[in-house]
Image 1 (spheres, rainbow over the protein chains, first blue to last red):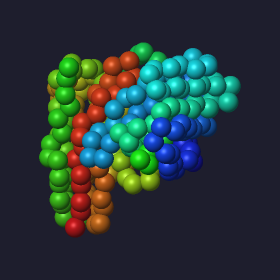
Image 2: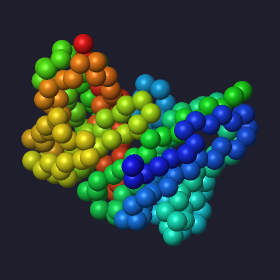
Image 3: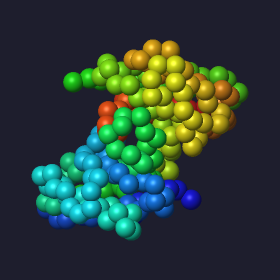
Length: 114
Length: 110
């Protein structure tokens, strides 16, 4: 069983709508989470991190973390066609040590329909 | 800013062949990673290295070797390519658990 599970596998949202992506860890040691985005033909790029319970907002992107349930979500408001990409959740046991094993989920394919 | 350079971009091999993928970074980051990306399975960690000459096994290390002879470079060897294998291998370096990825090496085995 994958230690980091993402849902849904794919998601289609109309332009201007809200996209919501989910991630759950089955390993209670994973306490620190990142969201990455990958456009076709490129490597993934970091979107944002979340290490504390609650919400973290960066522009149109809001991440939410519930450490008790090990659930993290990413919400994209006012979705744009350029947001169409593969989104990954990544988890680690510690933060800011720079020497961690980082585990990824299987990804959510997001399509924004014009 | 820095960059992660992976070579080659495309690699075609024969079954049973030993194949080497190379990665260079100019961020001066200590930690580097190799991930394999298969369709529908996300990114799976093969090896990572926290400093020159250090190697740490990931979840998918069987069938692979790695080498970190310099801080700026990290190479991955497929010890025996499997027939019909097709995957993208992604190299990354990190600072404070934020990963910076290259564009990948796409492997096809005939």
